[in-house]
Amino acid sequence: PPQQQSNSPLWQNYQRRQLYFVPWLLVPTGSPCGQLSPKRGKRFWKQLNQRFSYVPPEQRKPTILIQKRLGKKRTVSNHDDLVHALHETFGADYDIVQHVANATLTEYEPMYAQATYIVGPHGANMANLWFSHKSYLQGILEYHPAVGNHNGGPGEGEVNLCHQHTAAALGIPQHRYLIMDNGDANVGSFVVNVSQVVDTLQDMIATQQQQDQKPAKRQ
Image (cartoon, rainbow, N blue to C red; front, side, top):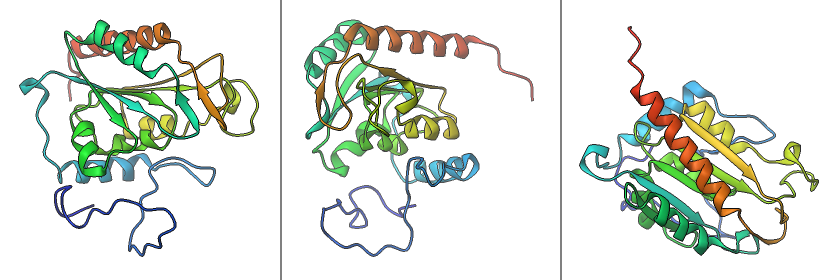
């Protein structure tokens, strides 16, 4: 793990077509070659948490972080409508913050450090959940276009669940995904069902609140 804060020279923003030499490389999501070891993943996450500054939830409002993807595929054409709905539905109890994909690591790392829920389209941005705190992050919610990420066919069987596998391995309480009725993961944008996202997030929050109210198990 890094030995200094995120503004340290140790942090380098990735540049395409540039060669890097590193002693260790973290591949943060599952792949066809294998999936994250829960024991090692939790140990690394704990060590990473010790390197950053976090504001305890009792000293601030909880945060819903929504990701805005840029580029030529899996962008959400009605992203602003979704952001508005999140503010309308959750704004009284949660801070709603956006991570736009062109932000630098030093700009977006603090966003994830305070995140209670992370919402966004499937993509590499979701791997930034590693910068969240293991005691604060309560869930992730991904949405996918109708045509999946693997073989180009429609349906649940074609959806890339790498971030879901990572969340499960790390013990994140809530990790869900939605499949929209339009769009192709390999090209262009798609429209998100705003009501479906909001309803699912409400259910995730209610489920977590019920879990929090249960008496702790005796050791």
